[in-house]
Length: 167
Image (cartoon, rainbow, N blue to C red; front, side, top):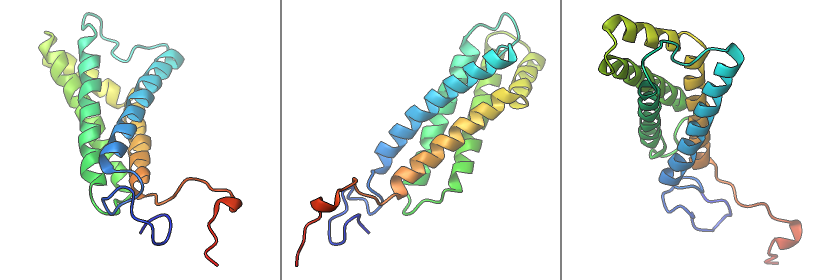
């Protein structure tokens, strides 16, 4: 179904007006922006660092964000390449993104030399505070937006005098 009756589908994919790959790129950029903004604002409001354990450096956070963005893009692509993807799938995108963030954080804290207990405590703290909610929330919002880009079958706005009269 296209935006204008009889007009060809601009995406050529049978879906909405935006190709799945393009929708994933836009949604991923949105996820990164919301994630960085959300983590920064949560840190500012709570006056706490995302990773409060001293001596770990910045690599655990950077690797966790990178892994979550990769998981977001991959999971969203598997959703939007289907015909008429469900908005409920955004929940799975959010879950995959959060799990990738926490797993990468845990592994990276271990790799920088902290013990198993420290890695578990850091990951559990992030998962159970507002920081974890930000990771999930950014992925949910961005995933929903990516799905909407593919599902929406709208055209550009048109003034009434732009309509062609075939009469």
